[in-house]
Length: 72
Image 1 (cartoon, rainbow, N blue to C red):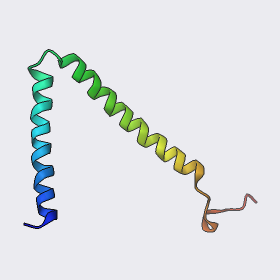
Image 2 (cartoon, one colour; image 1 turned 90 degrees about the vertical axis):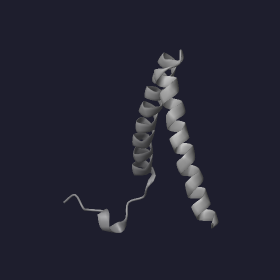
Image 3 (cartoon, one colour; image 1 turned 45 degrees about the horizontal axis):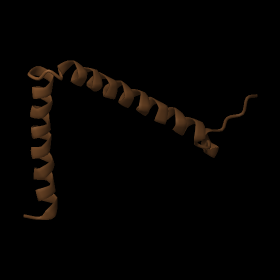
Image 4 (spheres, rainbow, N blue to C red; image 1 turned 180 degrees about the vertical axis):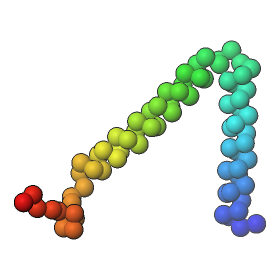
């Protein structure tokens, strides 16, 4: 088996295992409220982080000559 296929299988198995660990922590453990709060915090942080990155790129990218228009 080549390295790429082995890495793909490893990632697949780890993701499935991670899902079951997350489901256990969310549904069956006493840590459920904390896990839920952290999940929502990570989702909100990820979305706001992507929006902030888009804003940063828009603010720091120099305009190309084709996008410059005159205000006549």
